[in-house]
Image 1: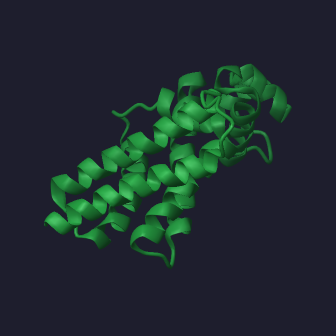
Image 2 (image 1 turned 180 degrees about the vertical axis):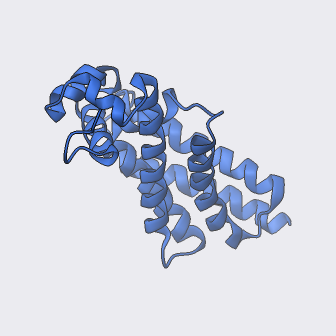
Length: 191
């Protein structure tokens, strides 16, 4: 069966991301995607292998988009300025793409080499920024894990409406990142 003219995998993923971000990742089905694209569901099988295949491609798409946003934010910056920039890029990505972000955390098949590669490239952006502090080997990985946990925790709580006290969330986030930076500086001074 020939794919519909003008319909390619990138178009399918962009439409899937729009559904996930506007309606929620649970609403992303082959039927809703086909309806958005103006095709019949079987036409999607030229681009994805069912709903699991669509979700897997969306995970990779999301990780790649996040990596690009973080890498762009770090250009021309170093140390604290770079850490703040990639942290803000991460949070902004989650705010703009809540469904895609949720998919990256809910559906990753870590046995898939393409998912491993995409996830590794996100981590590599953070590691490159942290190299300016002289953090290496296991210490760098521990800091990356802590950084990711901090970003994911804040973003997830915000997404779920968990910050009920009427204080500026951006200021809370800045303070959180600054606290991590103080810890990195303390580790760097010990070395």
